[in-house]
Image 1: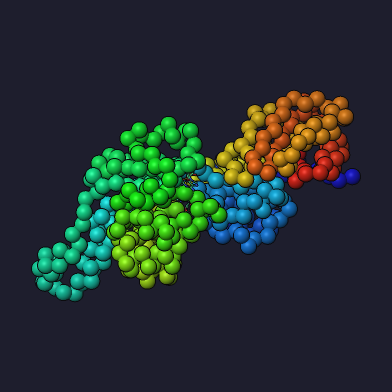
Image 2: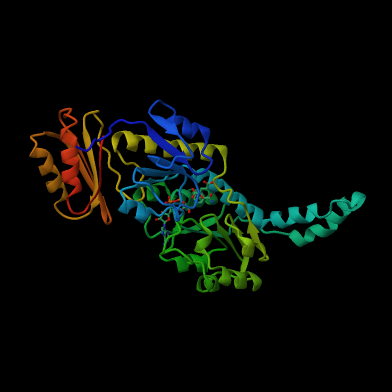
Length: 399
Ligand SMILES: NC(=O)c1ccc[n+]([C@@H]2O[C@H](COP(=O)([O-])OP(=O)(O)OC[C@H]3O[C@@H](n4cnc5c(N)ncnc54)[C@H](O)[C@@H]3O)[C@@H](O)[C@H]2O)c1
Ligand SMILES: O=C(O)CC[C@@H](O)C(=O)O
């Protein structure tokens, strides 16, 4: 008979540096953090590229301490019943502060100004005179009264849009998939664009805050640049892949884009004039790293211990108050009659279902069932085998 091991110690592997206060959440006798582990139950990650990784059969969840999940093969994970979490909003304030800093700094030519002043090192007593003579090349413009276009009004975009109003900027925003919660938080003084093109045409500054997906990849291209006001400043604190670099190079050369400020440089970008490159610092504050790490590890722990799913990106959220009784969790495809088949396997053993939840998201679904009595361990392998044999079941876990 197969043995089902319940309540064993869970091994966690980290693929990036994760804030200590986050890892402290997993510091108890039920967890072992081992970064060399070959068969971890859970992985905590930031930007580590996971697309080429092989996942072991024991891996149950990946917790991304951050927002973007383009470094993780989330569909392939769903196919294996591996839940991928992220931490929505946990680093949004850090990125917002960085974007607003970048808007002001680019407007006043601070980046180039500082570089030039540093180049005067060694000029001795002439430095003050040279500065007064040379500063005219860095005359900037004020943001007050200019229009900021915000593409993507999620956790970061909404904060940027609201706060830009306090800098006396006019703000126009575009997000066809905006959530109700975010819409409530947005100031009514933000103009609503009906298309991305409208933002391109109207804004003096454009900042993009959308995930990198098949839909958004390369969205900022020649066609987009041509619609923009000449000399526009473009801010990309989301992902490099949103921009077509061939087209960007031309637009910068021709002055159609006045400045491109990005958190995602590569060698090519470093060679482009008026491209200002930052070392992916948007979320790099102590506060944000701790927020993300704590949220990620709490979600991971809760899932490993109770099966509850909060803030997954490839499975639905599903929360069923945990009673400590036997819980059967099943990942399956989103097709009819799965709940019926699963529950009949339980009821034929005359076990009473105490609570149940079934949620779906796209092609995938998740069912949790609590059994009333603490069942004899011998019954469980049979239940597991029968549920596993149902067509369209991806994975079963008994807690
Ligand atoms: N530079 C950094 O360090 C850093 C830090 C955090 C996040 N990010 C990046 O920023 C992105 C956004 O982060 P967030 O926390 O605001 O995420 P979020 O999920 O809260 O917001 C994304 C928003 O984009 C919208 N959207 C999706 N497709 C769109 C489209 N085609 N057109 C317009 N809007 C669209 C969504 O409706 C959503 O409101 C992340 O996916 C990540 O790639 C970067
Ligand atoms: O982990 C980081 O430092 C950056 C994270 C950021 O790019 C995100 O998408 O949340």
